[in-house]
Image (tube, rainbow, N blue to C red; front, side):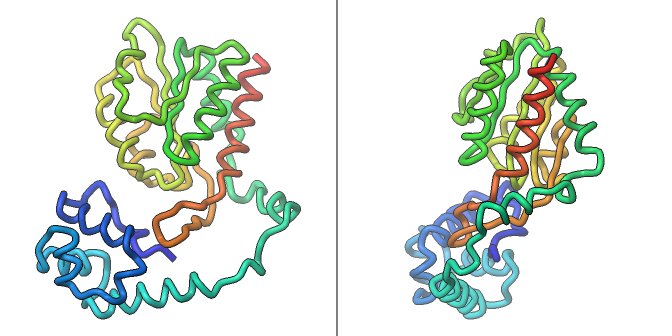
Length: 248
C-alpha cells in the first residue's frame, strides 16, 4: 500500500520534490507534525505543503496524517507468518505473469543484441545489480557489453555513430527518473536501439523505448519508498535472453 504509487515523480516541481523527500524520510514524525512544521523543516511554504497533500489524493492534512499513522501502525504489527518458502516462490514464477508471446519477445531482443557492436545495460538499485550481472555474463561469452548504475556518466562517449548500439534499461516501475532522463537525451540517436524490461508496459520508460518486455508482479515496499519487489521475473527473462545469445 504505497501512498505515492500513482504519483509521477517526474512531473513534480522542485518545491514538490523537496516536500516529497522530507515526508518519505520522516514518516515516523509526520503523525505528530503540523503543516507549518513540515513547511519549516522542508524550507517551503505552508500553502505548498497543503497543495502537495491534495495532489497525492487527500482532501485535508488531518486525513493525510491519519493515513500515515495507520500505515505505520500496520507495518509495525505485521509479522512474518506469511513468509514464502522456496517452493512457493518458485511456484509463483509461472507463465501467467508473462505476456503470451514472451518467448518471441525475448528472441526478438536477442536477435538485435546479437547484431550489436556495443551493448549497455542500465538500472538503479536492485535493477542495477541485475544489469551488472547480465553484462558480466554476456561479456564472458564474447559480447562487448557493460553495465552502468552511475546514470550521470556521459554514455554518448560509448555510442559511436559508425557502430550498432543497443541499450537495455531495467526498471520495475518504468518510472525511474534518472533512466528517463538518459533515454530522453538519446531521442535523436539513430544508431541506438533502446529496450526495456519492466513490470509496467504503459510506463514512461516503455513508451520511450523502441521495444519493451513486460511482466506482472506485485510491488512490495517498506515504509512506502523502499522497494522490496521480487526481481525473479526479470531474472528469468534475462537468463533466457542470455541462453539465446550463448547458443549462437
